[in-house]
Length: 439
Image (tube, rainbow, N blue to C red; front, side, top):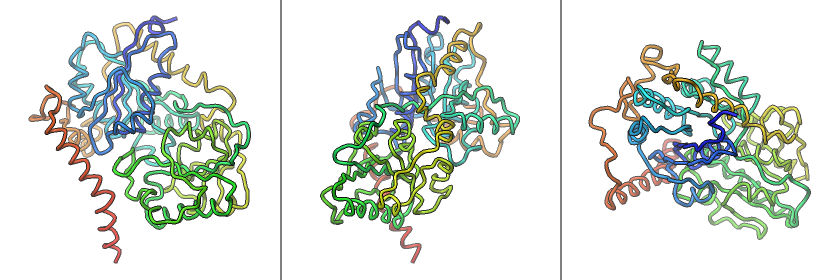
């Protein structure tokens, strides 16, 4: 057994939203051997979607330390102890953020030991496949959540002449929970809401009304609207039209409720999971909970439900109202990393073995080598780096302040006010301007 399988490991996770923190922290836990003593340090990238304390508590992952940083502050923290680096670094960021950090880390780690750098996707990859993948290229491991994704990822990298050896098949790190054994009392229907799908008032109101109608048609059932965030909070995606606000003033039946909390706990009492295209569908399928992916608004790339073609889960509200319970296609489920066959326990073995070999590599690891460079993408890469206050060489631009002290009370108040103003603009002002433009 490699030494890295049993020694104490230091792991860092950099995340830019509550969902990515959940993915990154749980991925870090699954990538480290059970026999190893692990220290997990969390870094939250400061921005519009920085998780609130409530969101972090809901995720339920405990870190040994957790602090908020800018991209430049994080890079400085990574370069401060070159002789005692982390063993593993998980970049749980949007694609542009991953690319910026890869270039920044390459510049920061010009010599000496460095961690194994890991990145990947939070859930289903149904849009911007090539763009997102090439922005993640350069990490030591690019995790694919299923066999289906691993094949697509390698095809993209090989198709542009990039090294595809980093692609490593795993599974979603947050699958789990007890298998579904039969109907509860009362029978419970859960609609898993998404912040940005669909993205307009008409369609979101339609879905809300159909859910309410289902509750009225089946008074013996409990109907839950599972919400991702409270008004004013942000997740990975911007939510301009929260269902909570759309439901205000609507006469809700007694068997209809809005719920928050950990998705796994909600699934514990679910008899039918309904969604447009949420990753919650894969969580439910893993537990063999009947799952419906709605076709009411069409099967479209913009909705993400096209990913579920062939799954056997596509259904309409009319069908569900009439008592239909979709039966998933076993072959499709197996290719999506849902692992209902019991193989989930070994889904991360290959990734763990790869990390152990990299940690034990004689002479340490070579410099990070992203596909995008100032030579291969001179019209694209500099803009990505500049958004994170980095120059074309990955070095912080002049004038970027150092993280020499924690923000004082005034700075914290200003920062919270700025975030509140941004969220008010997204959720209140922007929709009004858009409606005015449609007149």
